[in-house]
Structures are given as structure tokens and as C-alpha cells.
Amino acid sequence: MSKLSHKIPPPIVAALFGLIMWGLTFFEPSIELLPLNFTIRVSLVGILILGGLFFCLSGVISFRKAKTTVNPLRPETASALVTSGIYQVTRNPMYLGFALILTAWSFYLTSVVSLIGVFGYMLYIQMLQIVPEELALIKLFGEEFKAYQKKVRRWI
Image 1 (cartoon, rainbow, N blue to C red):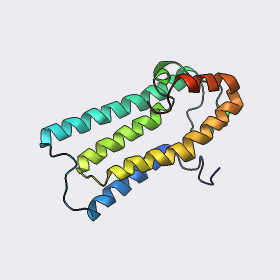
Image 2 (cartoon, one colour):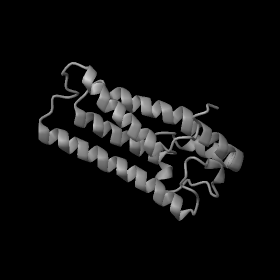
Image 3 (cartoon, one colour):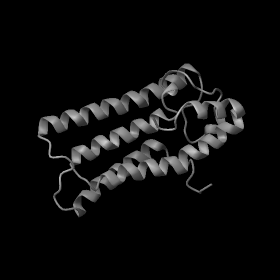
């Protein structure tokens, strides 16, 4: 595992990628992501943000109901394997939520190149957060987690 595994909280990772996305807009020609009028663009941004918040909050609520840790930096402290609620749709609703919010940010910026940040975030989270978490969950919950992995996709 990398030295960065489980070192930076995912909301901070998302914020850093958001800053990178904004910075990238200074290095591209004026090409709009989609030639949408302001009202449609703002509506799309709002829908993506609401969807992102829905996934994030649903994940936290499911963890709270199961009385297990929400701390992504210490997956080995999980006391329950949560497979109900939003976890029947995606194994990583909070990370998916942040990806949707970053996608909204990209549409807000109207920047094609900023989409690199969304994919960068997803790759970073996949390799340095999700994979180590899954290894910890296999250690904790064994075959139960492996069966869950087969039923529910990692992202959506």
C-alpha cells in the first residue's frame, strides 16, 4: 500500500481536486463544456449537487443507524458491515457523492479540461482509499464482505 493510503480525509481530497479543477481552467482555451444557457447550466449544477449531497448524507445516515464508524481513515474500526439503505445501490455512496459534486463544479466552470479533476479524484479515491478499505473489510468480515462485493458495484 502507498504511504498516502488513508492519510488524507476524502472531503479534503475532493476539495483539493476542486481547486486543481479551477486552476486548470486558466490553461485552456475558451471552450465551454456544453453550450448551455445560464438557467439550464445552473439547474444542472443544482441537480448534481443535490444528488451528491443525497448520496453523501444517505451513506452517513446508514452508518449512524448501524452504529459503526464513519471515519474513512480507520476502516479497521468498523463494528458492522452496512449493506442496507443506499449501500444496496453502491458500496461507496459518500465517494460517489463527492464525484457528483465535483462534476457539478466542472459544469459550473464550463471547462472541458476540469473534467480531468473528476477522473483524478475517482482514481485517487479508488486506489488510495477504497482498495485499502476493502482489504480491511475483508479482514474484518471475510466471506460476508466478499459476497456483498459480488452483489453491489463499487461506484454505481
